[in-house]
Image 1 (cartoon, helix red, strand yellow):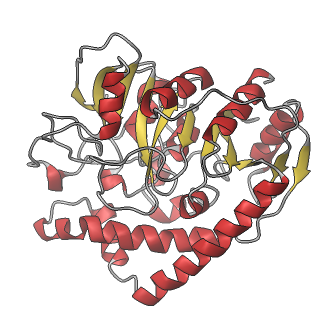
Image 2 (cartoon, helix red, strand yellow):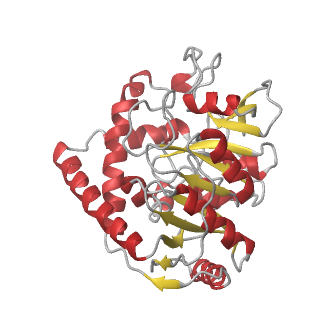
Length: 368
């Protein structure tokens, strides 16, 4: 199966962990599932987050495949092969952390690490029916993580249940505190346009959660989605554009990189203005309700047969990318829709309130 690009056997005796192949492990090349990096030298040091795992006694079981250069949402990869979707065969695994999501869905790891620049933990978690967390931007060290420079990217865990997701955060974040009480927490439900079965599944889950609910609009979502793409494109071009010279980047990613090269300084400046405004809007909403809720994805995951059409994948990240732009922590909870296909509930909290986010998710799951 195209889940692992390297099998590992470390000395730990704790939880089994799979690592996305954009995260350095000493002695192994970091290739980001790209033929253009097939001759990359072995990493001389562990990424900080990998060292934290080892210090916590975790077992490293493998480096996972991904959407090439972490620049895509479907998880399709012609060079390494596409990771299967273990729970929903025939559906895309989601990207870019496709192998990490598949590894935990298949029971091959207790949790996995991915990276999330525009939904790349939460989207594969949603597609594969597992939990995924994008922590507060900057909370988890990115030293030893590709790309070196990013104003959006976050290392985050994926797991098959909320307990192991929380255990993962404790393993990778020495500052992660005890979960707080959730008494009195009100959830702000953000109205969005999505498939009716997805909205019905979310409404049912929230109705049984025991938390008081309130409709709370975020008017800047669409602008933040567009601005997030501008920033992703510029930063990915800066990090990976040089790889096009060798002609080894897959055509789907190469085409997007060439388009990314056209981002102007004026567009980037405007995107930064939108980042500031949307961040303030989310901060204000979280003063009303400490947790926000909406779908992770607006529709069911695509069939693999339909996902080769890049245009068909547009909109998959419309509810997740805005919170990369703003930097707020966001967590995806797996549900099942009326068609028996994966649905995911996304919760968002204030910056630094990752513990509250996990606590509310834990309590909500207890009532499902």
